[in-house]
Image (cartoon, rainbow, N blue to C red; front, side):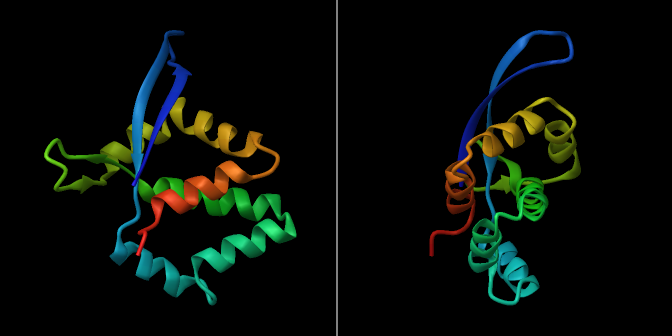
Length: 121
């Protein structure tokens, strides 16, 4: 799980800092792995090596939108639904995160994000 504090201006012009959570569980990981011939990690590595910015961008957008959710107070649940997705996607937090990930020319931020959202096992 990846916890990221994102600071952005809302549509009233107020600066807000909020914590957002991103996670891909083992079942989701298996489903994603099946979609990519050599697996997720290899796919991302190939995109990074080719410096295929458009494909990297689309892949990271997919991972962000698949992984955003909210952790329950007791830590038992990681909830993903259309309301949580829409609240994130249609706020300025989403473009701010994308910009921050791609502003790093070394793409290290993307690698860190990826490594933290996938299961560690």
